[in-house]
Length: 215
Image (cartoon, rainbow, N blue to C red; front, side, top):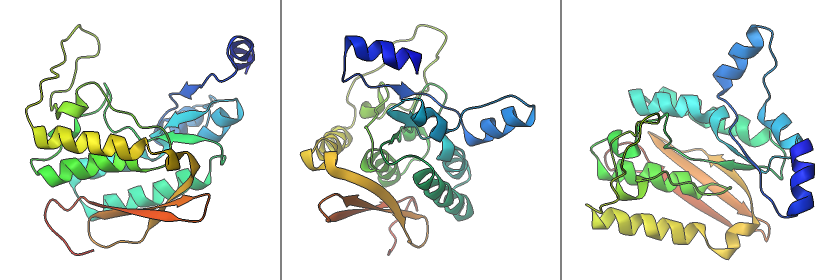
């Protein structure tokens, strides 16, 4: 709060992004009698955007197991995340970072990789693309040693797909997106309904089945 007060003296439209922690870690820290700030508390302190760590654990579990029950747990966690933050707060739904595997390493199925990437940009909040994610890099970077990033485009189809999603994300209408909510869908699919202030909506359907399926 003190930092935000001082920053706004210099630049009124400053944006604060907070790297809060996974829900499992919040529970652990509190279990040993230390305080760990929730997303809601972080937003109340003045942060504008937080990473999606409250819901991230079950999504990572699904990527590991590819089991539908883990995807169902993620859908539940998404709902909790949606309804326990202030309406002004933004969630950054990044998939890749220095602690996680690359999207391109999660599957050999191109449609799965595209679905995961597209989902990460579809929901309300700022987009986030980790270095090399746009080039379909599969190698996880070493965070503690200097390492060159390969920005070579090996798959033109995929890089075009990334640019298309970036253009969709940057549409002026997305400034009026006020809620991304889960819609019931069958099999290993994730359906998100984006609600806009003027009353219209868009639905994104993301297939994590690794094969064609009827939704």
